[in-house]
Image (cartoon, rainbow, N blue to C red; front, side):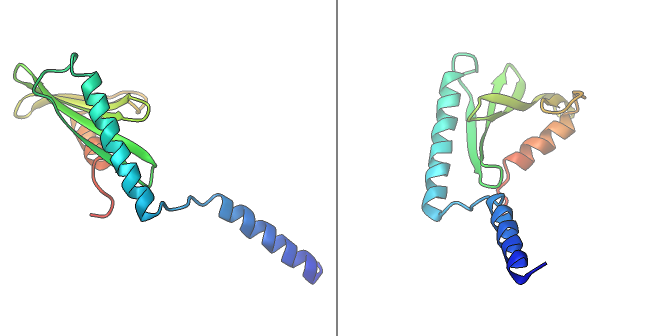
Length: 135
């Protein structure tokens, strides 16, 4: 293989390899994405206000690695605490936990197949999605 052919092959390889690498958002872009995520969380919560109890609270988090906005809503129905994780961009529920008394809860990660209704697994999944990777 000639020197020119090897050089051309390397240029093509590194060009294609570089195209698959996600670009990290700038500080300004990250700020805007987090602000938009908070807005999406507020909107999702407001849309579900009539479905959810009045004592609902929520938290939004933009995940730069996954490029997704996650929202967790918390609310009581009677004495049961409900905690739901949503993808705020698609409004898809990803996981939920319902806790009635200490030590008694059920939940599910809805992205898992088959669904195994494991509250501990759902809790860990929600916590992982809502934890900042910088911590």
